[in-house]
Every structure is written in structure tokens, then in C-alpha cells.
Image (cartoon, rainbow, N blue to C red):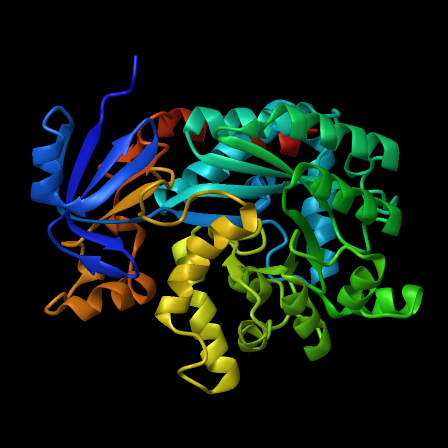
Length: 444
């Protein structure tokens, strides 16, 4: 039996790059079937369940294009430390202790927080393989239980300087990644290959990950030039800067999305644009970890689509794409002293449409044929005021919005947040699970 149609009529609808009145959105089987004048859609679809979203603006759900969900359990640990100290005292100290049930709790925690902040899709760059693919499956289960759309960037990692649970030999990493890519290739879960970086994955592993992306027609994610020491190591070992070396391996093409890209040269940025690659930018994480400031205007000039990620919550420490949409232009203005270098329209695309493109998903827009993933923002929330004219909506959404304004979240046509509260997960039970996991981690 077909799902009952929903006809949602908000006070404002953000579509085609602007907020418009007197529009409605028709949802059928998890897909946006129509966007048009409310009166016309009401007349044409009298059997649809009609919902008036009074005082709400309907906007695309945000896309968190880079996250490490388990790191939410480590938030506040080793804060304000140099990068390698932070890594050793938080990630390397605690992650080997995480059991599949802890990974599930961390993912549920991370995804719940970002969903309450307006995220409907997340790409989880996941590299804890202490129990083979059980950890990967735990992340998938958490996403399904919460109702968020998931891209699992299944990390391939063979540097033996890391905890043993991160590391897989090339044949095993390739086999496990392909197994999951075959198992989850439609619906609400998708798996893509993600060699960690040039300092954590061998050239052969990077090439194998790229080959899987080509074989299955998926994106291919990899950390590139986040820290200066990474650039220096790659230059010393391979005689080239990181993106230049990846290009020499033949993996820089339309499949690749690089994470961070803080220390790319101008020539590397132009190469990425010419090859059709993407950048996933994590401004808050780059600030918190003192990575540096990615030259975003140079990427934009080179035609590189830029998406946004929160990164892990122990190196940010928030899980909000709206926060990154604010930080991206502000940080670039401060660096360049140019108020026009990145604007609020750019930020909106980065947090929605560009994230969808970097993940290869039909999301990020209120448009016919796209997935019914969207957010209801309270127009009467103080953070969205004033709205004396039509031009204030998007600047307020990007620069002023607070989480208190997130009233409704819909993913795949289903309510996952209503009246600011999670629908499918009880927060008190989630808090109890988090506390139990942290008690276990401190005791072992």
C-alpha cells in the first residue's frame, strides 16, 4: 500500500535560492513530488494529509559531509592541546577500548545532536575496526534507529603507528569495504571507500580505495593537508606535496573529495578544480586544533565545490552544520580582510547542495524529485528576528540562527524531530547510555 501523501504548507519555503510565501510541498513515498502554489496543490491533491506549518520556514536539511561519530564520546578530553598531544591523549588512549555497543552509543549521540541542529544527512568517516565490520554495522544501526540518512565513509588504514584496531592489511581492508559497499547501496545507507590520508594509508591502499569508487560509481574521501607536518612528511617521503602526489597516483578526479585542504598550494588547488574534485571544509575543527585556515576563495575561484563538515566532536566541539555555515564565511573574512570573499548564499550552498554533491545523494534542495529531507525553522524564535523585509531571512539563518529555532526535522518524508524533540529516540535513555559508556571507559 502506498504511503499517504503529505502536503506541507509552511509560512515560508526556501526553494530556488530564496524564501517564498504561499508555496506548499507535496511528499510521496519519501520523495518531494511537487513544489508549487499552495492553493493549486491543495486543489489537485485533496486526499493528501494537509499540514500547516504556522510560524515555520521550510528549508533543506543540512548535510554534514565529514564527521567522526565515536569522537562525541571524547568531547572535552585533551582540549586545548597541540594536535599530536590531543590525538594521543584522546583518540589513541580511549578508542581501542570501545566495544561495538559503545560505538553504537557514540554514533547515536553524535547523530542525535546534529539532527536536533538541523542535519538530515551525515557522512561518518569511520576507522575503528577492533571487531572487524561490527563497528561499521553499529554505526549503521544507530543511524537507522534515529532516522538520519547515512553515508559511511569506510576508512582504509594501514599505518602501524596507530592503535591496532585502526589497522587492516590491504586485502582485508579492500574486502571489508567492498562487502559493506555491496550490502548497503541504496535507501537510507550508502558506503563509500575512504583511505584515511597519505600518512595513514599506503599508496597501494589509496589506489585500491579509488578503484572501488570507480568500480561502484561512488565518491572517494581522504584527509589531505590538514596539518603542516603532514605536508612535510609527504614531501620528504615521496618528493611531492600531498595533492600533487595523489594526482601522480591517478586518483584525483571527479570521484575525490578531500577533507580540510588547509595547506594546499595554489597549483594543487587549480589541479583539484581541473580534475572535478571536491573540498570538504571543517572550519571550526581547523580553528580548534590550530590547523590553520583553508584558502577558501582560491578553491572557489578554481571551481571546486565546497561542502562542510563538523569533524569529530572532540575537535570542534559542536555538531552543527548551521554552525559551520556561519563560521566558514566569518573565518574567511577575518583572514582576507574582504567582506565579499564568501557570502551567506555561498554558505547555504556549502551546507546543503554542495554536501549532497560531495556524497552523491539526491538531497540538499527543496525541489521536485529530491528526497524529502528538510527542516522547519521557527520564524518567531528571537534568533530569526527581525524579519521586516524578505531579504533578512537567509542572512539571519546563516549568521544568527540558534538551535532553539529548529522545530521540525523530516528525513525521507518521516518526522524525526517534532517541537524540538527527537521522535524516535528517548533523550533520557540516550543520556543514560552515554553515562554508562563513559563509566566503562574510565574503569578499564
